[in-house]
Image (tube, rainbow, N blue to C red):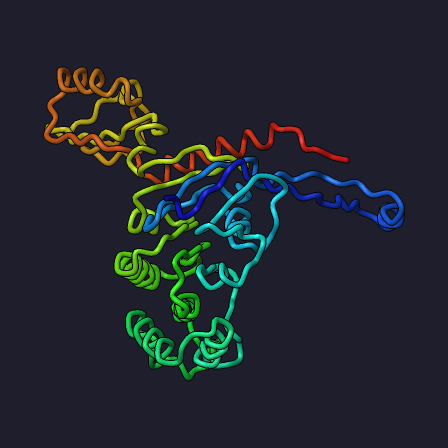
Length: 336
C-alpha cells in the first residue's frame, strides 16, 4: 500500500497585476487585472513506505507548492491526495502527529530562546510522553552533535547548527513521513555532509518515508534511489538517477591523452571541445556516434589513454530545467 497517493492534483493562484504609477494605482482600486498562475497541473504520484524520494525541478516548478498541499498548509484547486490514509487539507490532529515538514528557508524555532525551550513547546503541542521526549531528544542531539548547544539562543547558532536543531524539532514526535524542502540550502560543504549522513542513518534506522526537494545534486546522489522531476507543474520523469542520464543525456564526455604530445588542429570535427590542455583534450560527443568517432581518432592518432564518461548529473538536469523554462516562457499567460 502506498503511503502517499496523489491523483490529478492541481493548484492555481489568481495574482493581482499591479501597474506602475500613481494614476495606475488609483485605477487599480476600481478595475483590477489578474493573472492565473498554475503552480501544480494535475500530477499523479505514488510513494511506498520507507522510500526516500527526491522531488526536483527548477524554481517555480511546483515543488514547494506540492509539499504544502501534502502538509495541509494550502488547499488544492482540484484533484485528490492522501498521506497515510489522511486527506492533508482536512488538517486532522491525528495526521499532524504523523508527519513533519522542514523548510530550509523557514524557522520553526523561537529566535531569541534556546532550542531546548522550543523543544519543550513541541512536547506540549504533540503531547509527547516525558520519558519518550527525553530519550528522543537525547538520541537526536547526540546523532547531530548539538547537545552542548541546547542552552544557547538560536540566533547565536551558525546556519548549520540551526538546521540541525530544526531537524531535531521536526523529529521529536517520531513522524512516519518527513517532507524536506531544501534542508541544506546555504550550508557549507561540511554542514551539508553532516546533514546528509544524519538523514541517511535516521531514515535507514526508522524506515520513515521521506520526500526531499533540493537543488544540490550531492544531496540527491547521497540519499535517494528514486527521483521525480517536476516542471511546469507536471511530472516529467519518475525513476532512478542513472535513468535520467540514459533518457535525457544526449552526449558523452570523451577525454583523450595523445601519446606523441602533439594535438591535431581539427579536433572540432570530432565533437565540441570542452577543455584543451595539451596533450590532453576533453570532447563532448553525441552519444550515438561515440564509437564511430573513437574508431576514427584511434586510426589516425597515437592515443596513450582514453576515457568515456556520462555528463555530470547536474549538467543533464540543468539542461532539462532550461528546456522547461523556455517552454514556460512560450506558453501564453492567462490574464483576466
